[in-house]
Image (cartoon, rainbow over all chains, first blue to last red; front, side):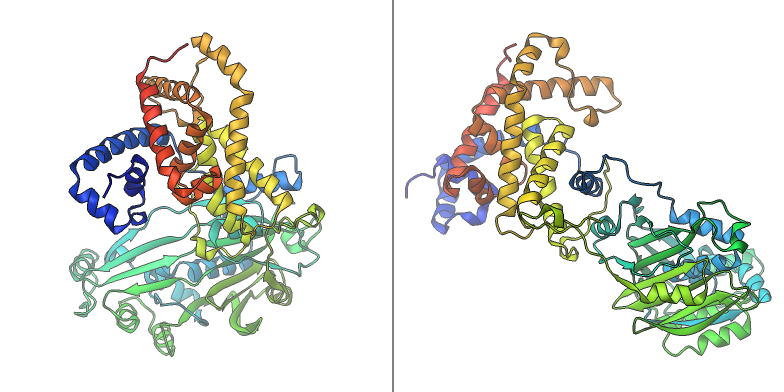
Length: 396
Length: 181
């Protein structure tokens, strides 16, 4: 066989599968070709280093946002500030009992590890929700429980992104999810939402019998024997990404809330995230449940109610402070969910799971309005490119 | 610039435009960056290419990727040509050879100076090469396969290796020469 040409040698370095068997055999046995190949590889490596210098990753979400603005002929800056959803949660928690329920709901529904810390269950892909009534005394008792570090080691995954985005299309692009938007917005709510996304995050927790014993001894609590299967067992949790749409209440909204808010006080939050997934290296959900509920300080009545839940691997217990709020099962867009409201009628929330996606709608609204918003959710369209009809380009 | 932006897995993006953007925008930027050595100009080129494409074609057009690669390549080459006069002035005046890659600067002044000098040499060397050699280097080192590079350049796939090897040898030789000012 003839010697390989420089072009053939060069391509074999980058795309080995492109060569024929005869070429590869020749290269293996021909010293001349092998030496030329080495020279070409050295030159290529030098060029690669030269041209790769300073090649930072592209911020694709920002790039897409800029592109959408140019496509729409916008002057540049996004219309309106984009308040963080955390502002919404904090503000409501501070001023409204109703939104405290919503915040609690999101906290529990979106961070299952937190449920471990308060004696509830980490569960594997929840598909239904059960209200667990808590009295003020129960809450005080649960607060007195030690945190997770008393039972093992918690490790967080890499920090996830948290950023404002321009709309549902951009949120969909940033998260890879089909983002839903409500067709119905109550008249007390301004119809222009601001969007934010939080990236996927993960955490793991390793149970440790030794740590549990030491922690119990240090706090002079009776040490509860860690079941053999639980010691060393690792729980992995994957949560997110989460998309938040925050809507403001219009001026002149509900008078009870006006007393407590500025005019830009957000009035509605629509959130969605893939169902959190929890995996275990050994212990079953039932093992964990039994151990945690047996901890000294967990109210016996509460433990009995959680233990009575049929299948803990698919059911998320949501704590409801019964002196301030109520909950009822509902059907949202054909899926089973749980609606919650505060006893004074100031605010409501509903959470449900549909085809692997966890949805939550919460706001300073009546239960009827929140359910109407929830039932009106539909998948947002993104950028559509239509040849020769630029006026039909739809941008969100 | 954002170093830790999470990119959704391509298979989870349903929208045709978003899939195209996710796949091809970084490559268009990379092509332009290897010709212009300016991240901001490179992004402008990629944005222009996508804008022009979107006004003319469907996102799921089978030729979308090729169209965008060619548009980014030609647009970046045009920018180079437009700037030729300015660059000639720059060559005569070392003071104007300021680093273009401000975004890539580090906080180490010595490192920054060395890097800028190296980039100046590379830009200078590339300017002395033929357009075809510059193009094959930009396309291939932006991550395009040999087949994609061939389509973008309008040549046979078998010829890409030859052109690439010659371009790499030429660039190596040019860099090792004292740059003319």
